[in-house]
Length: 382
Image 1: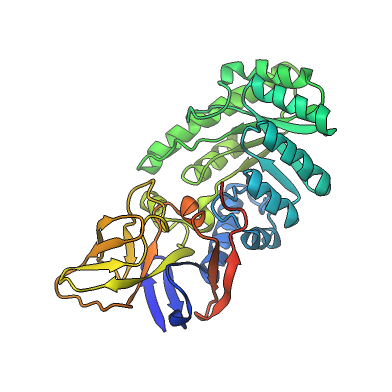
Image 2: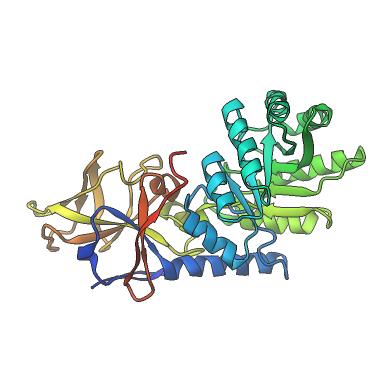
């Protein structure tokens, strides 16, 4: 029995680690359920009685029909997704799915096919430029569908989306296109990663004011905005609180964080203990011949390195000395002793692309027993 503890996150027990081929992504059912309960409590605190109605979680983190079904069972009805993820979301029974990426011709054809295969799921797409409108109109005529279209606004990240000053022009393009129906506004504030809550709150207010200013503009021209979707994980509490206090009451305001379901060390560094680490990596020592170093049987092909090297380990006190595709070398205190085959748990620094590196994960039950040895990550590869 392995039994590790992370302060503020609880116990990580694995009853039969020898039955698990490493490296392996592990998901702990107890911590997963705790994160879902915590999210509901946060939403209820911001908007009492709202349940999960204010949540449109991005499934880019879990990429798994198993996790999606768990969210739906908990009461989540709306999901945000890429094209691959949208397919498993619809197949899992989601009521509404927002494909939060501009569709080019090939993906527009896939989305149209998805709408035909899952008519009980309401599919919504986005447009951030007139070119997107043209693609959607062409696809509507070619495939015989009508698109629900949210306008994607650049609220500060400068990655995709129309400038708020151009929102009305984009709306007129949607209104004038055949087969397109205006469905609301989308503003993703993934640029908000400031170190303090005060700084994040100020950045959130600025970003949300772009959205609310556009709502006010549209309403002044007689156009109702029925739905607004905003937010990544670091800012979602600030965004929801601000929008709940300042948006017109008849608008369906939703936030769309994704990382919260599994959490990771990067976001825990910003907001310690907000959620638990529900997904970690089990690795083993393959060489322990040096006094102060060990080598693990995984490298950045199995943990995403886009945000820098991993930094949280069990046992604690380990530090990355160097890493490559297949190996990670860790330094440890001179008095510590490791042997080949010893187990190390790794908390990913960026969980979303880390999950994408695994074909499946092993689900660990509350007693440390393996609840499912190989749960597919069936929405991966995007």
